[in-house]
Length: 245
Length: 124
Image (cartoon, each protein chain N blue to C red):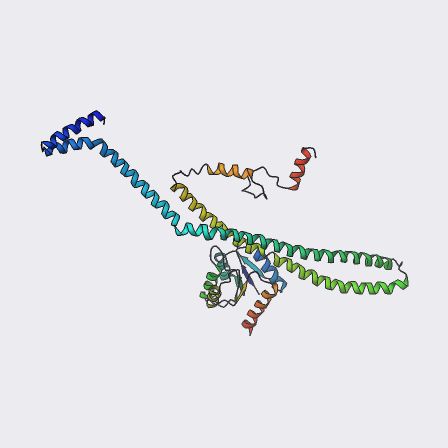
C-alpha cells in the first residue's frame, strides 16, 4: 500500500475515533492493516519454520546415535581396521617363517639325495670302489633317518601354515562389522545433508565417485577401482614394451 | 565317523577339515550356515557337528538349540569353534547343551584335545 493511501486512511481513522464511530474505526483499521497483516503472517510462518529447523538441527546434534557415531564408533572402526592390519601382518610373517624353514629342509634333501644318488648309480654300475661301499651304507642309513625327521618337520610346519590362515576368518568378521558401521554412518550423513536443505541428488553420486576413484592410489580392488589398472604383470610388461622399454 | 563342519567363512571350513583329516577323520561334509546345516543333519546320519557361532542366516547357538530340540538329532555331540568369547555366550552354549567350546584363534593341539575329550565322554 502506498504511503499517500496510508496517510489518507490514518487521517480518516483519527476523525472517526474522535467521532466515536466504532463501526467505521474497525473498518478503516482493517483496511489499513490489510497489507501489513499478510506480511505479518508470512513473517510468522518463516519464523516458525526457522525455529522448527533450529530445533531439528539441535535435536539431531544431541541425538544419542550421532554422538555415539562420532565419539565411539568412528574411532572404534579405525581401531578395528588397524587390528586387521596387524593380524594379517603377523599371520604373513608366521607363514613366511615356516616356508623359510621348509625351503632349508627341501634344499638339504635335494643335496643329500643328489650325492647319495650318484654313489648309488656308481654302485649299480659296479663302479663303486669296495672300500666306499661301507660309507654308502652309512650314508643311506643316515639319509633315511633324516628323511623321517624331515618328514615329520614338514608335516608340522605345513600345519603351522594351515593354522596361520585362520586370520582370514577373524579379519573377515571384523571387516563385516566395519562395513555395517560405515553403512550406518552413510545414512546418518544423508539425513544431515537433507536437513541442511541441500537436495540429495543421488545421480550425481556415481559421477562424484568415479572422479574420486580416478585420482586414488593403492591396490586395485575389482569393482571399486575405476581408473585404468593393469590386471597382471603381463599387462604391465606389454604396456612398457609398447612404450619402448 | 561322519562329521559336519559349519562356518560362513570357507577358509575356516577348510582349516578345520584339514585338521580333522590329520586326526584321521576323513568323512567330512560342510555347510555355510545353520539354515543349510539343519537339513543336511536331518537327512545325513552325522555323528559329530562342529560349528561356528556368528553366521548370517541361522547362528551356531540357534543351530545347537534346534539340534537338541529334534529327537532324531538330539544326541549328536556338538563342538563350537568360534571367535565369540564373552562369558554369557559360553554359559548360554553350555546351557544349550554344547559338548565343547574352542575359541578362535586356536591351535591344532587344542582342537585335538577337545575332540578327544568329547569322545571319551561319549564312549565312557
